[in-house]
Length: 303
Ligand SMILES: [Ca+2]
Ligand SMILES: [Ca+2]
Ligand SMILES: [Ca+2]
Image 1 (cartoon, rainbow, N blue to C red):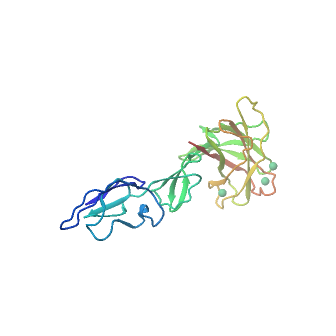
Image 2: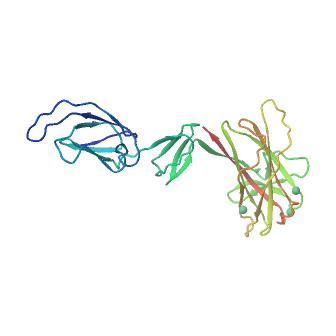
Image 3: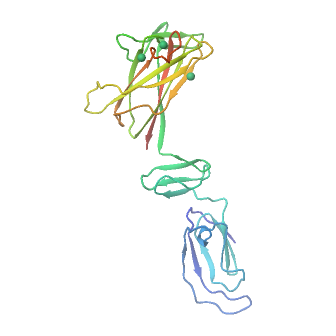
């Protein structure tokens, strides 16, 4: 008789009784029970390969039944019960204190860190990925085009501001902000840092240019304002990205950086950001305007 059992932790209860030997003899008496839990490799409870309870000589053993357990398949006959791993059932949930270190198989394993409640999933063979950090993206388009009039939702300074310009094709109607090649120009806006924010933010932007050589240096600065604070703090030190122009005119061009500076920021706060072209930077060598199309923040939060 085969018995497939369905729990991740192997638990088996043994009922013991002395069996009569084949062809006669008296049994009876005996009895009791024990619980077999997870053990070390090679120990009976591990069921690492095949575990036999009893011996190969039927009729003289005390094990008469086995119940419970998970991930094992048992068969028994005449006092010998043999249990093996059931390949169709695998442990799926591991628990430990701290980050997981055990090997895992993608799609089968889930791990709980008992120290802080974080959950991990096996995202690839022997690779654990924390599952309680959600990644989200916030994108701001640089501008819009109403018929032939361009505008932007960003706040612009009184001087040294990028010009909103329509990009109108046969199908697409949108706008860009044109940043000068020699004078730093900037725009700014803000977003609310989500509850559970982990502190790590990546930044990406899309831009284009008529020029087909040289580099553009983009700058980003952030600063945050909390509840009961006034909202005119100085910006943090800038993160910059140096990105080469495409070799083909007006092709869209991605630029990005990870782990931007967010000193003084916390979950729930308003994060102001300022984007500019560091046009007078010696590394900003592209001639002509750089047209900003969008900026995107990658935010992470725990659940
Ligand atoms: Ca690029
Ligand atoms: Ca500058
Ligand atoms: Ca320049």
